[in-house]
Amino acid sequence: MSALSPSRQPRSITSRLSTFFHNNPTLTLLLLLAAPLLWLGVIYLGSLGALLLQSFYRLDDFTGIVVREFTLDTYRQLFTQSNLDIVARTVAMAAAVTVACALLAFPISFYMARYASPAGKVAFFIAVTLPLWSSYLVRVYAWKLILAKEGVVGWIFGALGLQGVLDAVLAVPTIGGPSLSVSMYGTFFAFVYVWLPYMIIPTYTALERVPGSMLEASADLGARPVETFRRVILPLAMPGVIAGSIFTFSLTLGDYIIPGVLGNSAFFIGQVVLIQQGTAGNIPLAAAFTVVPMVIMFVYLWIAGRMGAFEAL
Image (cartoon, rainbow, N blue to C red; front, side):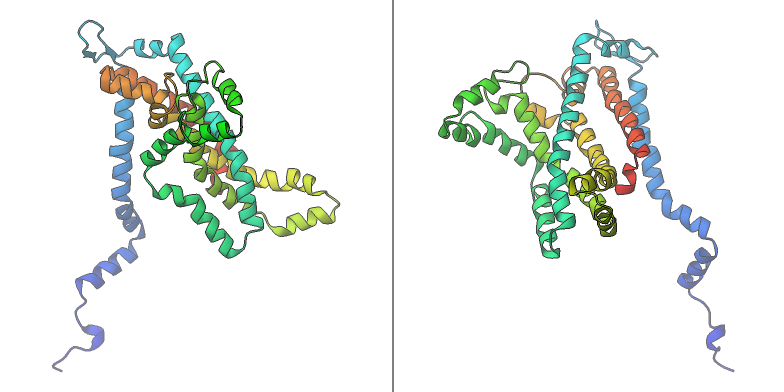
């Protein structure tokens, strides 16, 4: 018999490797996860560990050299009044932006989930994500022009005879300024605009999962639309809102570009980290400031997880 039968022909290397991995699923899984786990463990967690380690060093005030000795002096600097004001200001802005995004995103998401046609949903998704297609810096500087004293918003107030109202708003201490683009208002408006899509999409996802039969059952039991919204729709949509708040809160907490382009001279955490690391060369204090939003977000994520936010992601 000169030729081997098909069942006895030599198997290729590819076929033998396929059989080997099929018979060893645990090894296959480990090989598939090796690269991402290596990246996560060495690059990502390793850099965070190095950052945390740097926060326990201190900067010598006389020589300007980082003293690599374990100390809590750098963390003690965080509890000075000026640094506590920076942390409070940043957290307050992140909370205000999150609440504003939730209030704006909910009716849009509700209409998309309950009333929009399939073509309408596509149009809404394009409209929501369209700003994300452009450069982040372009959008921020566009808001600076819009909110400038000679910008569109100022022109509208003047054309409507409401210049006095705008001046009164800008005269509010701490959050006011010479114009909207040089005030906390401008920072707030830009943050809401930039992060709003990250609130709309998780909220829409949660609302779309609400079965229509539950709304019909609520109506059959005599509940009015307001009561159905309060007792059925809102609780079921809340995990999506909380999931969106994770993005809006954390992104606002660490951003330094928007407060640098818009807003007054009041610093945020991201700006302090940039200044201490780049200009002042105080790496330990920059690292300690970075730990603050990490701790805040750890607590925030724990609370969000308890409220079922990750189920809506």
